[in-house]
Picture (cartoon, rainbow, N blue to C red):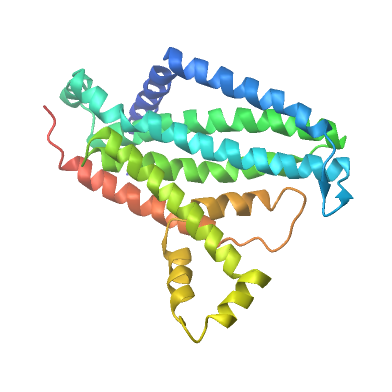
Length: 279
């Protein structure tokens, strides 16, 4: 059973992990550039857009652009989370901080939990602030609050936890840059699989499936299995954005999928770090 003292140790480690990254000048510069870029996008809300020969209304433009920007920010936050996480273990080990911590009465699970918590909170805060800027711009454009935007941002925090866990685990078994590249590959594969599965469910995709059924009956079956078995982080984003504008038909499966993967990765990470040699 976790004691109050154990929880306090975890929170202290999380606080230092958070502060170490915030003190980095590169992190501050990156955040300022990202916030400025998002703020400048407000000019896009004032443009005139035509789709299929029909001019879009101001409300439709605001909702559509806000969703596009939402996806860009969420994907960028995952990229940043991977960058922050990939160097944590190696840096602590090279600087002797890890050995110093292990000499003290600190369990390994406390170190891992604190690091995960600190990096996750920082990544979520980074993403949530940028999403809040878009929330304010969209609310001013629509002349009404869109609280679902912030709820969608919190849902995407689950993806950030997944990224932190997978990069931390891989960084124990391979070079830092390789762990980062693998995490990016998982994300790109999720985007590709999600796009193909969405296309296969569209009218055009259904028509192509019927035409090719005699030639390759099992082609789409493999993609369908991949949709259910691969980490569906971009599916989670799409499910989150379905809340914006009160769109129906959202599936909760991507959230369950990512939660199960996060739980599995957490178990593997604690097991692997317990066997790690610390010098």
